[in-house]
Length: 162
Image 1 (spheres, rainbow, N blue to C red):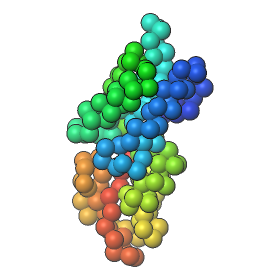
Image 2 (tube, rainbow, N blue to C red):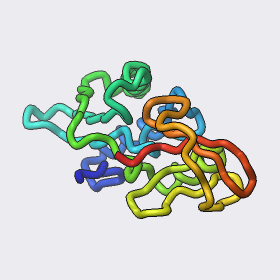
Image 3 (cartoon, helix red, strand yellow):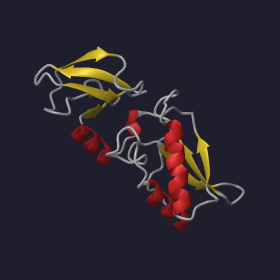
C-alpha cells in the first residue's frame, strides 16, 4: 500500500508547503492536522514544474472532503502558494495505518482509537484495555466504528483500517 510521504526530502518549496499543511486541522477532529491524519498523501513537483498536493479522503463518501480541500486551499493561498494544484487520490484508499504516531496519541487523548492491521490492535483510549466489543459497524462518521470497553465501560469510536 502506498503510504503518505510525510517529511520526504524534497525541494525547499515542497518542504514549506508541508509546513503549511501541518497547520490545517481536520474539521471533525480539530486536535490533529490533515497531515497527522494521513489525508495529505504527497507534495510533489509535476512534469509541468507546478507543485501538486495529493489528498485522500478517509472514506469515499466523507462529507468533510470538500471542507478539507477548501481549508488546504485557503492555507496555501494565505502562505503565497496560489499556484499549487490540489489532486484527489482515491487509490489506494486511505488507511488508518497512515495516521502518524503523533496523530495516534492526539486521537487517543481525544477519545478515539486507531485500528491497525494487527489482530487485537484496538485498545480503549481511556484505560488501554483490549477487552472491547463492537457496538456498531459505523460510529459518529462512516470511517469509524463504535466500540465499548468491557473494563471501564466507556464507549468510543475507532478509525477503521481499510
